[in-house]
Amino acid sequence: MNMSDLTTVVVELGDRSYPIHIGSGLLSNRELLIPHIKGKQVCIITNDVVAPLYLEKLKTTLTGFELSEFILPDGEAEKTLDNIAKIYDALLSDRLDRNVTLIALGGGVVGDMAGFAAATYLRGVNFIQVPTTLLAQVDSSVGGKTGVNRPLGKNMVGAFYQPQCVIADTDTLNTLPDKELSAGLAEVIKYGLINNLEFFNWLEANINNLAARNEDSLVQAIKMSCEEKAAIVSADEKETGIRVILNLGHTFGHAIEAAMGYGSWLHGEAVATGMLMAADLSCRMRKLSVEDVARIKALLIAAGLPVVPPEAITKSEYLSLMSRDKKNVEGSIRFVLLEKLGKALVTSDVDPLLLDQTLQAGTKLGERLGEAPSALT
Image (tube, rainbow, N blue to C red):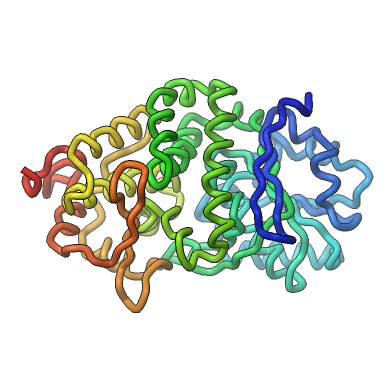
């Protein structure tokens, strides 16, 4: 590739700072990878969907290293401690030492699991993120969150562990199913909502180009998303303050994922619906206007995302699952809501009646999300 076409965003963490390289043809670019590989041993961790598409290309780029691979089954349901143990056993069987570099080649599940394995194998080894989905390129590969799911909660076991670099090859998005592309757009939209109204406005104007996979629009969206996340992570690496706002939609969304069974809803789909639920609650609290919620809903729909929560989840299930959220403090559910478009609000001070109304919205029990609820008229 022409290096002038390369876009780079840096996550500033002192001596642990690292680049996010964005562009076409990066899987074949040896110059970007080599500086971040510690020794001669490299293990590529991927899954059975991505491996047939990109594993051999990456291995060719890494000719000359002692290469091994571990291929996971695809899917959120595979994000388990049992599979982490299988990764450990494979690394030990191959006699990989502390100088090994693990490379995560895949989406968010692969990245989270490879990162957790890297954080804990021999008490910590080198790793590189090579995300192949839009969601992973704009969110899960950046910031050092790693981990696995448990039946009672998503990502409840894990570690903060930063990669050496992130290689976001936009060519991998060409093989991404439309549903997965839409799931990634949910996280892109999140950045506009929480901290950048100008970006939200840009997304409204460009959402059709993004859904149609226009390369220039995708690179711009990935760059702006990574810049937003990098700035927040640099200021609050371990989520003790401002980083919490990155969880807009996740309190409701994680509850949807857990209640419906991991993999039933894609993470981005659950986050999209969760963001609209958060917007609905913000509206009931008189932070957003009905028109603001309508804009959010229209953008999510244009991105191909669901906006109605599953009817099968009861209010008590939501409350039980949300009570286990990682953001909670001393038993109180902490919500990431919207003070206004482009500005997030973190609060535990939510009227239970208004929360009940939001949890019922979108089902046969109440009004539809984003449609002027009676509480606001």
